[in-house]
Length: 258
Image (cartoon, rainbow, N blue to C red; front, side, top):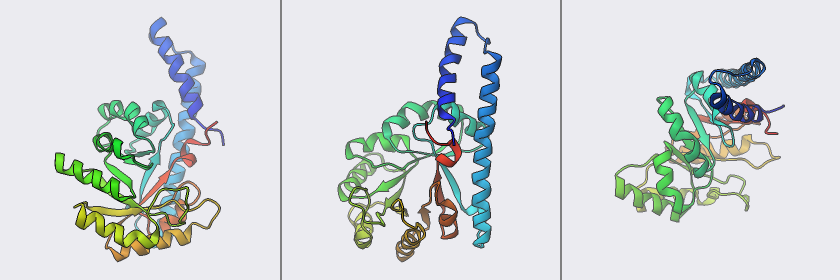
């Protein structure tokens, strides 16, 4: 499926020059292309929302108990703005630097945005991250927990925190091994004074995701954690049926990046 991002990126450059050369002189064909692309984007968005609602009802859950967090990494501001204008407010980014370039301006335009960090967080980026994000989903090692605790001591509060669990124990991925999760959560709470409100996972590619979601839910239940961030484009309906409170979806909304 062709992605919308290249069209929005090209349009942003053309619009810029239109404003310089002759304000209001947007070519009719460009206006029509943008309208069609925005329509496709919103159709995909509403389709994802409908699938979440259907999966929730099939599991006997209230659809409102599952929050769609749109993965907007690498997407242009123009495409994100379409979704914001439609009323959506929950988004996620993978990199601190990219978020710095996009979201301060959007927060000035739109109230009530909740921004999640999905990607690995380096300790030297902690201060930047806590000023940008409302939720950090990737607390996954002791030195990061200590860095967050230090910032909490400095400013008195932090974004909401989730621990990332590497349910597939993949060496190339970040996250706490399931066998170490109990000790790590205890360390965060007792040694660092951090309030971890839930867990996040990314199942291995090519494997059935459901067992990984079930494992994450089991770990969360042992610790009384209510927030489960699990499920992406390929598997968010299964995640919803297995208890996800947040699903992270990008490609199903924006289309494949080309």
